[in-house]
Length: 265
Image (tube, rainbow, N blue to C red):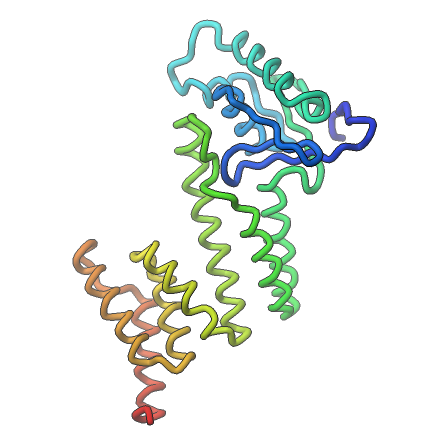
């Protein structure tokens, strides 16, 4: 059973975000959260929404291993100030529950939770071969990202623990959406996006392989093979390694199909 919360009697919608700067929106108004400690605490609660976060854990988010002697009392003071900052409609979402606090959120009130729900929906749609709808669900999920997660949260602990896996999850979701679009035959439309992504992540071989296949299926075999050669040179120069299996498979596929089709006319 979820903890009781003091909802605004008018049913004012509340939304929180961490996929970018920390965000709290009540109705149509965004609530500024200028205090760094309050942003850290809110981010820590949102990353664990609907789960109790102990006071000790919150203190670790704030100070790492170097805890002040009065850390427990200080955390309680910061929570009190955060509730005051959020105002009556949103403050009731933060509930005291031993051994700490829980942020009690419903569907659509947290961008990270909405992101996961859309991914789940996409998986169900893809399993039914409804690839266009699955791609649209993933596009909606990716649209929730306003910038790098926890962008304005000055907590090395949270950023080191949470940001890298979230960024990787975003990239995996983006690649998943691209795979679905390729199944739908959208190769030519994908080339500009994939070219940009390869420039941004030049050592991510899965993206390079996708660009090669998209170029090839758009009738640009020589461009696809040129992408492989550039990627190979970069991998040797920066990592001292040859391309991995996925890139080699993409090259072999293109060479094989090109040989079967004969020279372009």
